[in-house]
Length: 88
View 1 (cartoon, rainbow, N blue to C red):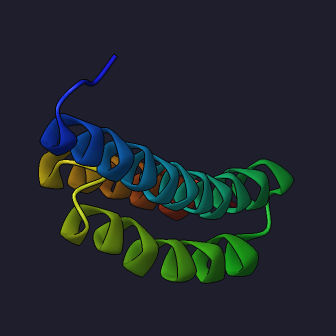
View 2 (view 1 turned 180 degrees about the vertical axis):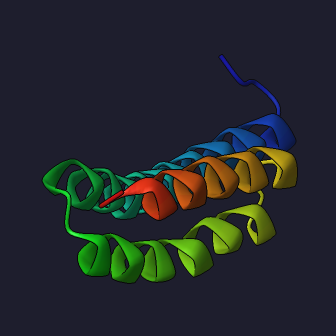
């Protein structure tokens, strides 16, 4: 347990940051799940639209420090290749 005023403040800040990051991560996962569902349904237009919507969300997660940039790049690359393969 935090004892000094500074450590108490840091604990409060960590809780607040954790909540914000959790919400961001959840939002990004929702966008990625929509892409996955569109790919599974075989609808290329829907998958492409969902991917276009997911890309800025994923990159925003990088900017905010939720994901590492290489992680986001890897996810986008794999999703893009899977969307391109839909309907072939």
